[in-house]
Image (tube, rainbow, N blue to C red):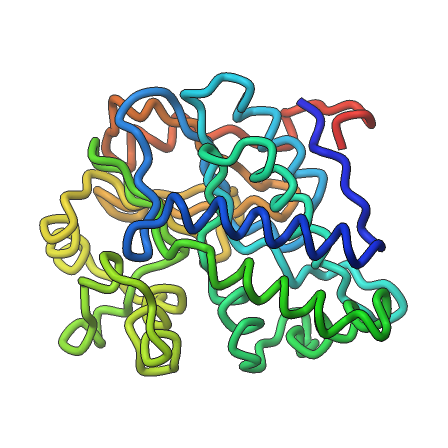
Length: 293
């Protein structure tokens, strides 16, 4: 499937595309969650970090022309590709926004730590560079006097992203989960309500959700019981092989590097992490034509 065409340099078109996509996302959001159906299929990405080739491959795998198919995408911005020192990964966001406008109930970009950092203007580094400033400068470089309105539209899109995409059949997709050490102050109800300013601060529950790296089986089991989860599907960690299952009910994905992978799941039959890994697809095995980019 070809990604929808977008005009990446016309400010009015860009603003309208983001505004329409934000409305679609908010219509699907209950609390800070998108509910996936318990039938059909879903393709789940790991971190993408402005890799348009792998985005195109993931969209092809998702076959969104069939209404029962869905795709979950994460960490779209802040890639290593630079143009004269500018990060132009707003274009990746725009491609996904255009895809949402074409398939408004089937595309689920979930909030990740890089998007949250951009939204809150909290510095974050990748590859030795501070990315929030580079992203904003990239938008200013392209849109000049119109850049404040474009940045506002981007912020609106980031705010509209859900924290979680989950199904009643037991799949739970989020960028990460809280560190085990903060569970005594973590509010598990954060996924059931609209995010507050406190939630996105460094001591807030949404912040904990997108930044956590240290987990244990007992912690995962407790969260699974609280949220009725069979399988946690996360990004955020560097996974050299593209996918790994270090816990019984949690796996992690990367989709940005040459060994990146995506997960293709039957929503009616959510299995253990060890079994679900068998459904991972290495993106280098997916062929796309230039017309599909």
